Image (tube, rainbow, N blue to C red):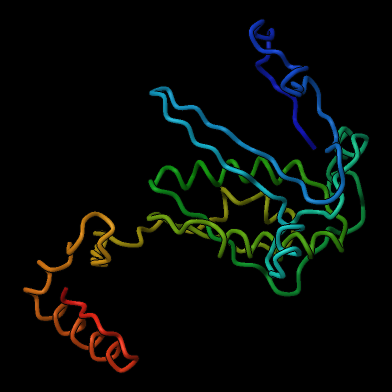
Length: 236
């Protein structure tokens, strides 16, 4: 689904939309074609910098490159009626059927770059979870996806907390059930890697030969390369 432009007021008269084959979406519109969905995203910086990214939908990218990965992308784009359908009220508030639960609770991790940020993230999750409605089968699938995303697909920042959830009510109590916030490392451990590949200037790694660790590795690599018949020396 292509979202509408929320800040559009009027078209610059110097831009010929018809000639450039451009369209400004003023309301949500479905993706116009089937198959690979590809979009170009521009970000213009205040100082004049410009970043451009070309994005492919995960389903077709993985399939076309014979790769396997975790994603929630569908093969076909959603229709407009589904995108604009009103969200149902949470079933747990209107149904007498017991809410779905997991046989094995999930450990869910939160991290942030600051101690107060962990609480802010937990509150944001709480507000999001309160707007969800789950059927028993969908909840089991959702919890597996959620645990995988939070625990392995998020950046592991300095300050961390966690909570255990096995039901929708556990999710909505995230800000009450999270553990104490703890700091992973008091001081970061830094490492410097010198490739010596000469990407800045020729022979940039020669000064590192002064250090035995670097020199010994170069000598071992040179012996290995000579075994393959290389006529040149890594020492230059």
